[in-house]
Image 1 (cartoon, helix red, strand yellow):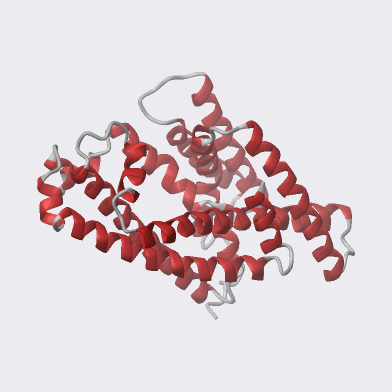
Image 2 (spheres, rainbow, N blue to C red):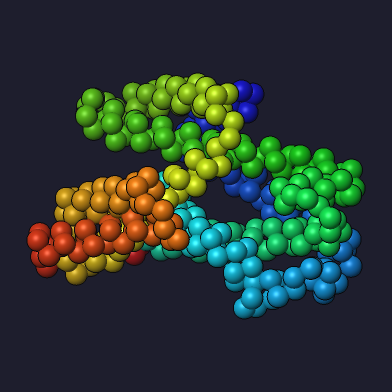
Length: 316
């Protein structure tokens, strides 16, 4: 509840500006802490070569064996659901759309990819170091707790702040993202088209308050959400990957109507749902959802598509 209230106070004053600046400041802090803790981990483990040599299955931490080191099912989950789910993440899309130009949007995407890569390297270093120091650790989820038990006290204090800022920046971004959708896509478009900026800001703050209350209620009643998150990534990938990315590419040559995107989106979600509840296959439901979405778009383009005569978007 305390986190939700703090996030609300971060979001309400200036909306997107509050979220962007808090994410930037806390993001820099997190990157600095990642460098510090990774350096400490390598030192405690005796260096990278020593850490790898102590791993019980060295083929899983080398190339190419490490590609499937987490298991085929987990790797497929990343490829088919998690990665496309992040590519269609609403918060990421809104940040790209908020850029001043296509050139700036590309910079945002490139920088985001670089930061994600750095964080993934950090995860690998911490995980393997902990496995090296505690070979009898029963559960992988206990790795970070075991690692924090051997770091200096000042690092432990900073890491506590790292966890808090991670929750804060993620939550306030999600709150602002949903509030924007409710304000612009529902209230402004269908309920009050004549609303001025002051009224829209007021409604955005009201929606943020309502979202905070709902988030608290959900957190109290649903304390295990990992499987739910995986499902949301699967549906997001099935319904949005093809319309957003393939649709953007195809629209350069063919006319993309709203009906094409809508049918592709709904087909992907329905297909993912059918394979989730009605069929048990080796491949994840998101895989079939993406394929069905692509087929639906191809059919709709064949029926309604024509040459695109619209001018290309400006790069500046």
